[in-house]
Image 1 (tube, rainbow over the protein chains, first blue to last red):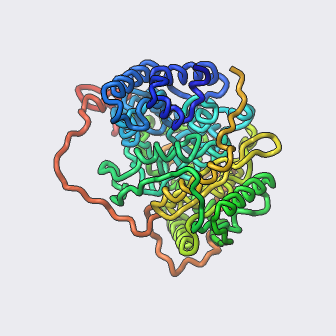
Image 2: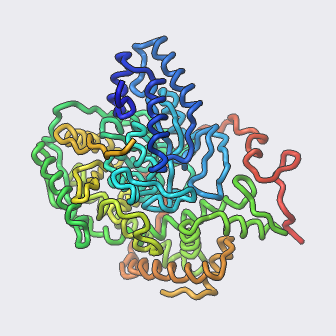
Image 3: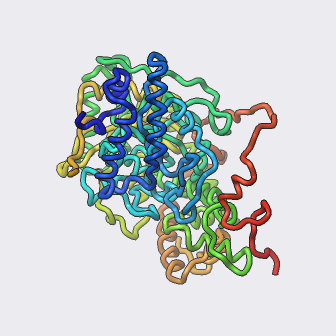
Length: 489
Length: 97
C-alpha cells in the first residue's frame, strides 16, 4: 500500500478496523518515513523502534482476539514530547542537565493512551524545559519546519509539530505553558489543543510553571485531536491540580453547522505589527464560521497587553522554584567539586542552557527579598484582571476567535540574542494560560511564502468539546488541514 | 531598570549558578531589558486586588483523597538515576569542611 504513513489518525483507524492494514505495517511505515526524513527535520530525540513494533504486534493480536471491542486508538502510532516521562525511554527535557536520565515511571497521559492501544514510537524535540518559542533552545539541536527547513517549527513543542506536519506520525503529545502547543501547531499547519488547566493530568510532565503548565495534543484535524484528548483527559488522583469535574464527551458530526454559537472577535488581537496575511487569513476564517451560522460579535479583552509582562514574571518565578531540584545529586550528570556548594554551582552553571539560566535568574530576582511584592505579587494581581476579562467576555459569547501568533514561522536564528523579541511572539497565546481557559489552534491558509497561518479558538473552562465542534465544522468545509508540505524522500 | 553586576552576582548566588564574567555581562544587559519591559505593570492600580497564587481557575478545588498507603517507587530504582550512590544512599561531597 502506498503512502500508508501519510494516513491521518481517523483514516488509519478506519483501515485498521476494516483489516486493510495492520498496526505493524502502520508502525513500520512511520519508522521508515522517520528514517528517511528526520535527518533533515530533527523532530525526534529518541526513537524506540523495537518496543514500538512489539506494541504494534500486541495491538494486532488484541484486535484479532476481539475485533468488536477494538477502541479507535488501538494500534495507532504516537510521539511524545520529551518533557513527558515514559518508563524505559530517556527523558532529557532538551537539557544537558537530564542527559541520560531514564525516568522510572510513565506519565498518566501516556499510560492512558498506551492502555487504549496507542504505540509509542519515540520522544520529540523541545526547547530546554519547554522554555522557548522556536525549539532553538534545545541542547540537542534545532528542529526544522517541514514547510521550509530554513525556518523554525515554533516551540516549545516544535518536534511534535514538525513530526505531525511532515506526516512522520499521525498524532503527538505536546505541552503548553504559554503557547507551546498552539504556536508550533500554527507554524507547522496542524491542529493543536491546549486543554483547560486541571482537565488533563500532569503527572509525569516535568514541571516548568506549575500554575500554567498543561498537556495537549497535536494532530491533523480537530477530529483526530479529539480522539486522543478524549482518552487522555479526565481526573487523576496522582495530580493534585487535576479537577474532579466529569469529562464532557466530544461529539463531532459531519455536516454540523454553527447556528446558535456566538463567537467573539477581540480587537486587542488585531494590533499594529501583526503580519497582514495573518490577519487576512484569520478574518477569512471568521467569515467561514459566520457562513456556517455562527453569530460573530466584537468583544474586548482590555488587559491583553499586560499578558507578556505578567507571564514573564510568573512563569520564571515558578520555574526558578521547580528547577531548584536539578543539583547533580538525584538525577542527571554531576560536575564534581571539592564541596557540595561547588557541585551545585558547577552542575547548574554548566548544564543549564542560556534561556533556562535567564529565566531562573529572572524568577529568582522576582521572588527575592524586597522585590516580591513589586514583581511577583503585582503580576499575580494583574493576572486576576486578565482572568476577569475572559469571565466578562464569556458571558456574551461561547468562544473567542483570534490569531495564534502575530507572524508565520520565522527564520532560524532570527531572534538571535534578543530574548525579549522572542517573548513578544507569545502575546496571543499567553492569556489562555494565565486565565486557565482551553485553546485550540488550526490552519486557515498560507502566507505569500507558502507558510501556514493558524487561527486560535479559546473557550470557557472545561469546554474543549465546544472548541472541537467549531473547528470540526470549519474543517468540514475547508481543506487547509489536509495540505501537506512537499518533502523530498 | 538597570541591574548592576553586583546584583547579577547576588541573583546567581541565590539561584546556585556559576557564571563566567562574559555571562554576567550578557545577563545583566538582557535581564535589565526584560525588567524594563515588565515595569509597565507598575502603572496599573491594583490596590483593590488580592495577590492570589495558583492557576487560572477561580473556583478550583483542592482535590482530597483518602490517606492510605500505596506502593511507591523502590529505592534501588530511584538510585539508578543518581550520579553517585553507595550502599543504597546518595553519595555527595562534604557539606562542611
